[in-house]
Length: 92
Image (cartoon, rainbow, N blue to C red; front, side, top):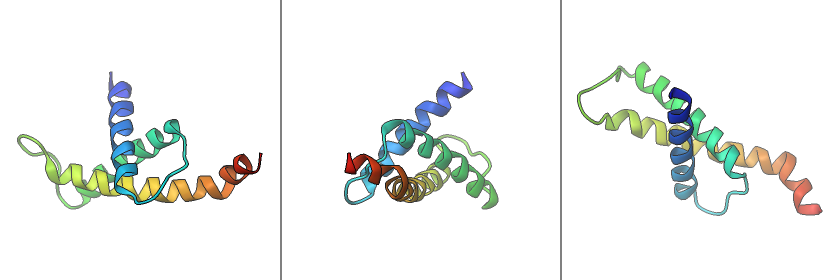
């Protein structure tokens, strides 16, 4: 069940990141989901480094760290995608 939740959270974070980034992103949905999963992992690590382990109720600060990390990873990942594979797809 842990992998299913990781995929769902990654999917939601990836889509939120795409909505927050201005302009069009060209990375496919499966790659956006992976970027979102990485954003969740990095955001949790940063939150833990700032001393946010677990709180009672909804942990808003941890979620903010996750969203910020997902936005950065989706942005950089989309740039790398377009620099490598995306240009080949546009030429054909």
